[in-house]
Image (cartoon, rainbow, N blue to C red):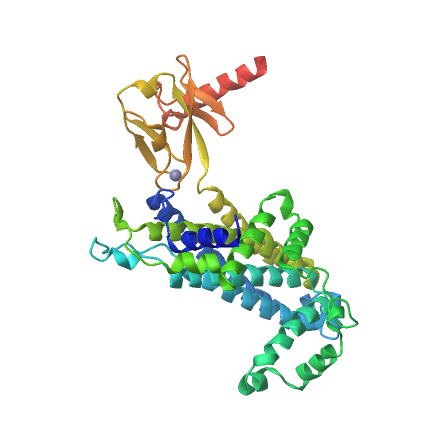
Length: 432
Ligand SMILES: [Zn+2]
């Protein structure tokens, strides 16, 4: 192949957009987006209240740790921390607004075009995502370090760029004589020394280095080894959109008729579903970034600045957000096992499968394996066939009825019957 052959292939691939396949169940996707979107919104509202609480606490010098008290150098960090938290809240709110589920009310075949997703929607969502991951990691890094030189580096580099194009009114609003003198000091430093000078320092200049450093030091790596890769990938992906973006702009700006799909709720388009898939992945990553990286750094910041009794009581509230996001994320697209009597799958009956989210799916004859999932939360079901006449399987969650056996559900047994069964189990365990 020569350069023209390659150019021809690129040209045909970028301009003849293939009809995008609908990759997963749209209804499940909408349910999961609605669920995570609510969880995320309530979490950032709880974060906003905590942020107000911390701001009040910072005003009381009696409960501030020695190094951060009013007469000490590091006291300057307290207003900066307040500002960083407000900045974080703003970018969180933006993502929350852009990741709500599709509104399918009143959508018919005639107006289904309203659900079409193209350049504008992708551009809004993905550029906000770029801003979100970058800001949240950067803010978390500063909250964790509370290091004067590291903060100076971050702010002075940013001000230095801002000043280049800022209009007169913006400049006069932002650059007072204090900032001006700091910038003048910074401009004396050669570019190659910016990350290691008498007034500035940056040990982790790139996004990836900051992520790895924070994941390592906060202990997050122990519970989520994929988070680091996931964050770096979403950063590269969203940068592609916000920068040159050949692939992204060609992909999203192609117009043309779409095939109309439909489900129980009504019609929809392949582009709606493809966009929802991306929206869900972004929302999921936004939740993980907040609870596995940002909030643990906020707790470290509280431990450094506030006396232990008060820091602990605020950290408790932060931990409540962390646990609720953790549980919520784990409850989507999970995998659950059901014990089922051998041979029941071949019988002409509906088999009720109750998911952990509380929704029961009637698995209809002829029992297609493709139907083994929950419409509500997207979790997949695996069956374990159990031979013989046994009624219950003993699990770590207690006895569970084997589906298809003639015994009642364990929870429907009377209290004495439940106790008798548990005693039999204890006896068996002892003899084993
Ligand atoms: Zn479910």
